[in-house]
Picture 1: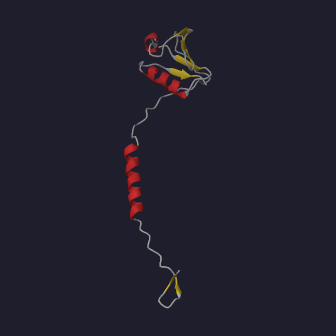
Picture 2: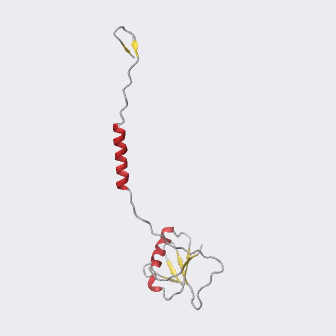
Picture 3: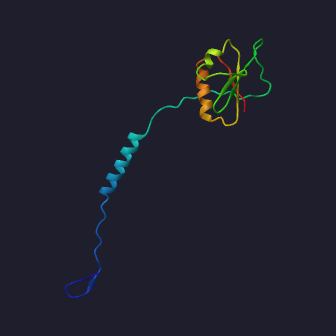
Length: 126
């Protein structure tokens, strides 16, 4: 408190708070988040979960793919992920089995590669 002319203590006047700088900061944050965010669309991957009673087409034996964290096996033979579409032939359905340590990204990569093969039925075992 400041004394006045007569020596009495007067209450201090409060300065009015300016919100101009706050508005500037909010505008800069809004601009930063708008420019740094991505607006990409994520692709959808169709999955068919294995269920009981589902049969295969007559006369076609399914192809069995085992997906591990580091390896990929097609009917008991190791194969590279990029070479898999060339090894799939005909209209045989594909059954994918996941080994321990397989990440969701690895499964998504496999399904993207399998999507390139036209009219391929893919079933993922749980």
